Amino acid sequence: MMREVSLGARPRDEREMIAPGAEHYQAITMIDAFAFKRMLDRVFWYPEPEVLCFEVRAMPTHTGSVYDVVALISESGEPWFAADAIPERWDYVAFSEIGWGLAKWQRERLIGEGRVSADEPSMVGAGVMPDFSALQDPTEKARYREAVIKRVRMHRLAQKGGDTC
Image (cartoon, rainbow, N blue to C red):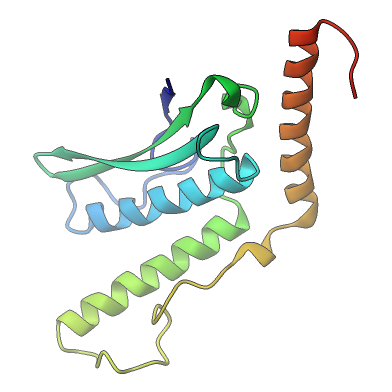
């Protein structure tokens, strides 16, 4: 059995880039939601999917889909997840991914309008999204990893009622 926790489409202190119902709301919010999901994977140190995973869900409304990132947490995944560990702002990797996603979306719009050739390789957003993970601050990466290890160790200590390594 997996417990589900709704986390929204972006970090808590990040504003929406576009108002709900606006012309491009659905596309832009989807870009945000997938960047948030990937950021949560980094924060929670890429857990095994049967332990803890994050998925993007689209919820239809009268103005189009609204996106939500949901944490799926198994019993053994409880020590991996902590709501207070979710960053309140985008990290640099997510910010880069969002920029690239917006460029890809704009490129596709221009191609659809016939203003740019699909064969134009020099535009940002062509091809597969680059791996921006090398842009992550190494101390931030280490801090995320240490926090997960600490939660898992504390959970094991609490279960055993004593000291372990």
